[in-house]
Length: 272
Picture 1 (tube, rainbow, N blue to C red):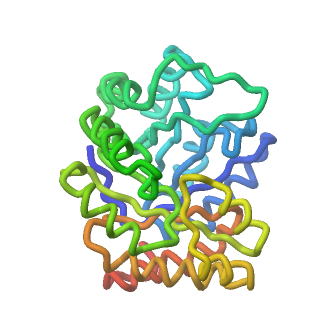
Picture 2: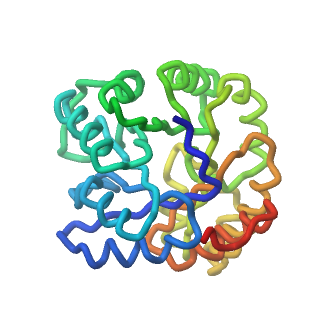
């Protein structure tokens, strides 16, 4: 079941059982994005279950994608997450392996590819879209493309990129990836970095390419303006099917970035 969203955004869930905070974050997105991603122990911290957040999102009429991390679960727990997401009416799941966390062992029972291959069957009779992530800026492009092929072959309906700050580099990646993606939709991610500290943190990530000009603009306080420009550039890029915004706590600013993308595609700023 493909997801037809044009704009999406994810939220970091709190470390405490604070439903009001989650409702507020979802409300900030509800009118400007078609889909809300519910993260799974984001940044390696124990947080509210994304399954709990599905119900909070549905209160506000927002479609959801539940993130499911293989890092934290064996196949019994992974299946439980998929069944729960389907039962609660989530529209999809994003299958992730999960970044390593110091002093926390990985479960290593299932890979992302194996999870993708099982998820639709586990969710029956509910039709659940399955997604995966891709790094368009790897050191070894052939290896990343081979992994992307395995994910698509396993049943990925959509693929979400790491944060994009270099549209030309993404274009070059898509030239190689387009035949592999086939009918799978590509959601290009834009992060809302605000200040040098956030830029420094992202600059250390091996899967993100942050050009010097972008680093300087973010460090000078122009991260939201940069995200809006990137959104417009991505709207004109062949092979990009949707914009995914990673707010990093700036949910209110998603409106501006999503509006830039929607306007560039000739659509109303608000979805409802």
